[in-house]
Amino acid sequence: MNRFLAFLALAVSMLFAAPAHADPADIAAASRSVVRVVLAATDGDKVAFVGHGSGFAVAPDKIVTNAHVVEIARQERSVVIGIVPSQGGTSYGGKVIAYSPGNDLALIQLQDGGRLPPMTVFSGPVADGANVVAVGYPGSVDRAQGLNLDDLVNPMSPVKTRGSVSGGRSTKQFDTILHTAPIASGNSGGPLIDNCGRILGANSFGSLSDGNDAEFGFAVSSREILSFLRKAGVKVGMTATPCRSAADISLQEQRREAAARAKIEAARKAELAKRQQAEAKLRTTISQDIITERENRMAIAALMLVLSLVAVGGVGYLMIQDKRTPAIGTAGGAALLLVGAIIVFLSRPAFNEIDDRVAAALKEQLPSENGNNGGTVVATTGKYQCRLNTERSRITVSQADTLDIDWTEGGCVNGRTQYGRDGEKWSRIFVPNEEQTVTISSFDPASAEFTTERYLLGLAAMNKAREIRKQYGNRACTSDEQALSEIAEMVKAIRTELPMQTNERLVYECEKSLQ
Image 1 (spheres, rainbow, N blue to C red):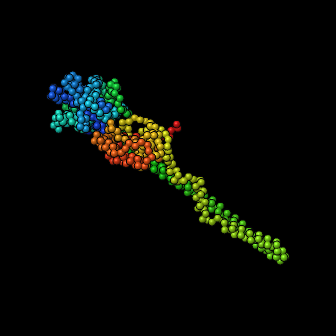
Image 2: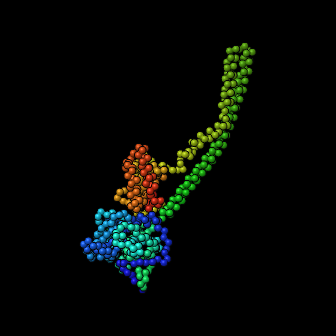
Image 3: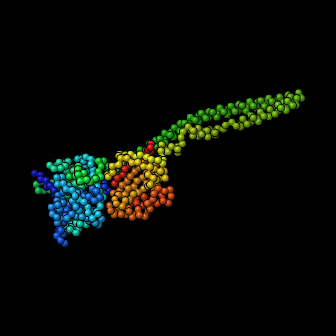
């Protein structure tokens, strides 16, 4: 008969693990926010280890864990809470500010000015069989490594174990997610996350079967976590967008670009066929016109030549009649007719004029191939309304469906931020001092698309990006070529230090605002 050992995470073993397809960059990003929650009893200068659990940041200075992890600290005044991050070199004190044993949740306020990158909660439905990852600090691993108290209060990476959702379960008190990701004592309060690193639940307890470890763990559902945080007055990042792998998005974009190129090529071929058809028709018409014009001019020249010869005969007749004055006049007319005949004959159109006339006619009738650029409309200076294309985006931490930008052709955005040339696009990189996120924003005038790429970095990588950022001035909008070159160099320099995969990529399709 199965027994649930509530409020204690126990070791579980996976006999048949379902394959997981989590993106490593997203799991690494989520791990930044996972902490070890250490409880120690103090007696003067003496400190005794009481126990530990796991937790995760939902705000820069607030940690969620299980209520049973910190229960003893509420009962015994000598027991203090320590929060040990997964990175860096500093640990912090903690104080329980919200406590809900009914659904095994507690909220800890970081002390000593501690700040951590917060996680995002997935608020949508969790499908049976979905891949999940449990992140935390199982005590069995600590014991296997022979760690002592000094080791436990030093930052170290949490343990990640993979499994799948076996269904939703409601205990008598609260909603839980049943899953197969291995957890053990010490995982309590750590997050259960999806393939994009979003919170699905907080691991709470495991199951026992006739005294033997079983294959299942239970996590307090995100629904319970959101309700708990709402009552505690904590605003948390959340999204209901289903997780999509970076590989799927990349493959889709490659197919979209291939389809776009094929469409442009088809349009080019259709335009070429249209031009060739029009050219053939024009060539036939113009050839006939030139032949007719040549024949008409040659006929006129022949007529003028005949008339000139008749006039010459008249001159001879007048000379015989000794009418010199009329003869001179007639001779002049004959000369004019002869010269005119020669001019008309020589001015007849040549056959090599066909190509020139066809080209001129085509230019009037059909647009230039270079002029229409495959139908692309290049964005010009003005205000744009941009809408998120969810089918082309990978959304992990954001929920902004629309974006308004004021674009200037020289790369100035919203009248204050100067972007630099980045191939066909204009880009700017943002490296904040208070967050562990690097953001690259880009605008492509050729497609009127605004993209936002976010990298959720570890502390070491973030500090390196900040060091590079310090080498460049904070440039406002400018037309100075040196300044534009520095912005472009900054984007390239920091980009070389970023992972191959972004954690989030948002694609906004923009249209010029009517206002």
